Amino acid sequence: MSIRVRLAGAFACGTAIIYAIVALVSLHQLKLGLDTSVDSDLRQAVPFMQRAMLAQVIETEFAGVSGAEMPNGFHVPRSHGSPIFAQLLNRQDSVIASIDYPSTHSLLAKSELRDLESKSLSETINLPHKGGSIRLYARKDTLLPNFYLVMADPLGTGPNAQNTVGTALLIFFFPVVALAAIGGWILAHSALRPVEKLRLQAEEILDQDDKLLGVPKTKDELARLASTMNNLLANLHKSLTTQRSFISDAGHELRTPLAILQGELELALKPGRTVQELQRAISEAAFEAQRLAQLSEDLLVLARGDEGHLHLRLESKVILSQLEEVISRFNSTLEEKQITTHIIYNQDLDRNISIELDSTRIQQALANILDNSIRYSPPNSDITVRVTSDRDNVGNQYIKIMVRDNGPGFPPDFLPHAFERFRRPNSARDRFDGGTGLGLAIVKSIVEAHGGQVGALNNVGHGGALNNVEYVGALNNVEYVGALNNVGHGGATVWLSLPMPNETKI
Image (cartoon, rainbow, N blue to C red; front, side, top):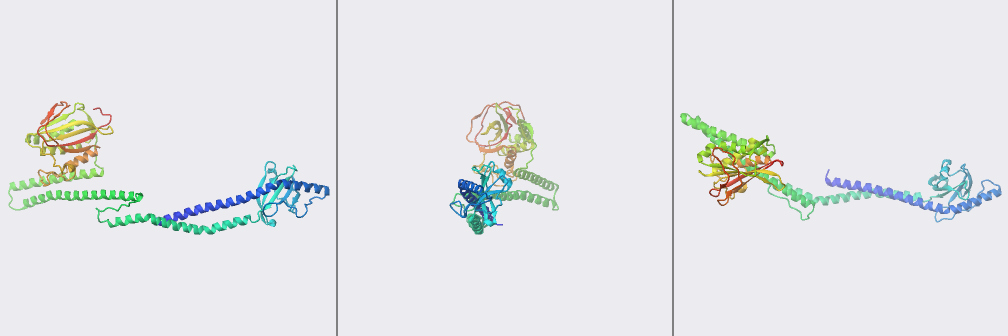
């Protein structure tokens, strides 16, 4: 069922309910008004009726005739309708005297007489021989204390007026409800016309993910809806573009080692190969198989990170020991390039400070950063790893690790994309020197899974000093110093920060 039909139905139902309530209240108010007017006439006639009844009782007593009536034509003058008639009742509910009502049958039940001792009575009863409904007013007679005065007023056309009004309200009920339904349909159609326009625009751009919806200039809810949908479409377009690029790059990265692996194996299968040629082919195949396995693992880490399912085995670990373990893995490479690694620890930071982390993942992130620094650092240079503490705007504590090298640095146009997947400073895909372009993307995924942040920058200028550090021991190819002048100029710094519990003392 369409929204227009539902809204029209809602308008019709609402109108029907309101109309019925108004009709019932109107009829009730009409009846109340008629009863109030009649009761007022009856109360105003009480003094006259009491004197008339007293005169009739006296006349009856003197005449000695029980049940005599007033002469014909005696009635109480009033502002409208038929004359008021009355009865005078004793405690046994017998008619002692009457005016304009010849019947000796009491208008009240005996049980109702007892209530008249403390209050008056007003009610409507039906008397067919008096033209239908009459309005009664009864009270204790003040001139004759042991008797009760009952006065009645034929309602005449009052009930007919109520019936006429009720019939008219019922006749107009259905047209009013129908008009409300039609009005609801028209209003719903007018209100939903811009929504339908947006729907048609959205249908037109189903196959054009770079198109956006037209935003109405009304600055109302529909304009805000269109703006929100455009933001959603823009995000979807960005995600689709990233996904397509990722799939394309991943396919290229997988295709290259697979092609090399296939070529080496086909070459090894050719007859007449020497032992040395077979060993070289098997070695190349093993290298490409290892590269494929690592690439698959890297893609799996990124996919789990995107889904928020990167499993972390959090343990309390000393951050310095994590650094030392990672650096020790590169001892042979550091010695080969004669690179010295400096660990700088701020003096205000406890060197045995521990934080909750997944040791395997954090070491993988640190190894990726250090591997990049070693790859791009010239021989006989330095790599500086600085560990410091930091706080964000709301007072949360972080351990910040900065790895600085003296290499060529990041190309300026590459720096904003350093942590994107398959991004490398050198667009040439050298499988020996360029890597896969996933290293820093994995760093970002791991650190963000720990609730931390990452960043990269190019070092500006040269010289200067790093102070406020502490001597923390010795490690092969690692020099711990109290102050270090920056050697050379340029290079790049990659940093990551990991959250610490708020109660950690630094």
